[in-house]
Length: 295
Image (tube, rainbow, N blue to C red):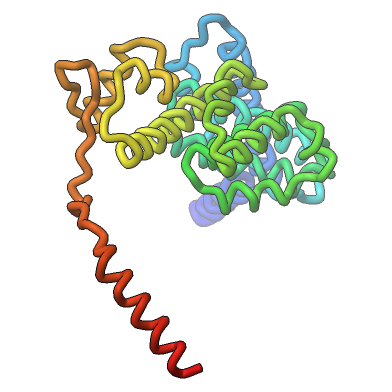
């Protein structure tokens, strides 16, 4: 009897172990994980549409969703309907992540979110369709590359886009025009672009680009002028106030004289040497005489 009870007990334990590892239990865990992800996603959507946005709370939710997304299926499987739902949710979360990284001025996070989003925009678009935010965020990425002076990568990303989109889409045309202005040295056009962005999020990288352009103009002023007035420097740098010019000058190490001029000294410049005109003339006459003798 004792042996039978022991066998029944062991059999019961084995049954419990089998039950815990059954496909139904695994499916239940996946369902629970998906439901948890959807709940977090809905909470993120709600918080992100509020005004003002609680960025700290949104960041906390995004951190939780990063863990949840790691357990979701990014690669299409046999369950097309469930997989499509997961991909749509993941794409929407990543798009909010891009906007969040801009709002918090986190460039490394922006790069990571954009890199993941490109899978959905280029690899899964036939499965889940095209996002309404696709070209806005791809244009934002182009502007980011331009602001970092990564021109080769800029053109690589541009080649992935259809020709008609490049020619007509406002989100793509904007960074493309800026790149052309940079190549042509039409810096005034770049400054004017500050008030003509296709989306508010573009201003973050526009400000970085404008600072890069100002640094380039400042280097040109140092090489081209012996001195320049505060007012003229403000005009060339497209700065509105004298204080802004002074702050820029301090950062560049410029010295403002009591006369209201910045004085530039080129330490590498060599002293001017007089042209030996008489010696050159005598040599020319000698060469001419020798040529006549040869002829």
